[in-house]
Length: 167
Image (cartoon, rainbow, N blue to C red; front, side, top):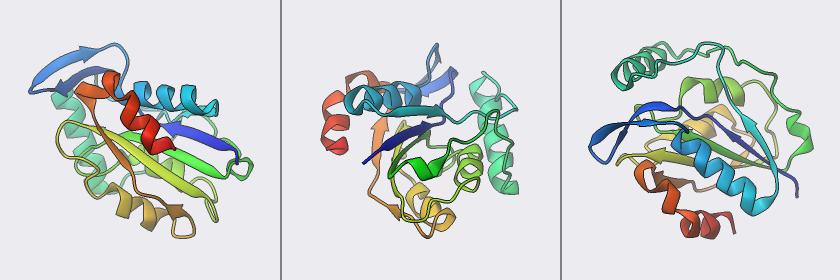
């Protein structure tokens, strides 16, 4: 079975272990690249045309406004041909209890019927939130498997957890 690792990630100021720290690479990107390294499968970064603020507080407010408006931000690149894949590993940070709205733009841009979606998220205490249920609503004809929640501050040490989940 062929897989795609599609992920949304954000570098810049992030909340990690009770502090705001500047990340040169986003936590979800680190997790996605670990999965790609373990599986040898294709990577696709979900990027929006509009870049989010690198300031943590400003970004959280942008994300909250988008969630409240049920926004579907335009993607910066074309979505890959999903028909070529059986399994989609879908990565994102937990923003306000769910995936960022750009992830839903991605999900609504292709036909995921019959696909297996394996969500994974990075967080600092909120786990998967209600993102799995939201993904099921967005892709009712896909099989959404139990996700993996990775604490962002521990992502660099999460190889074993990721490997066990991927298997």
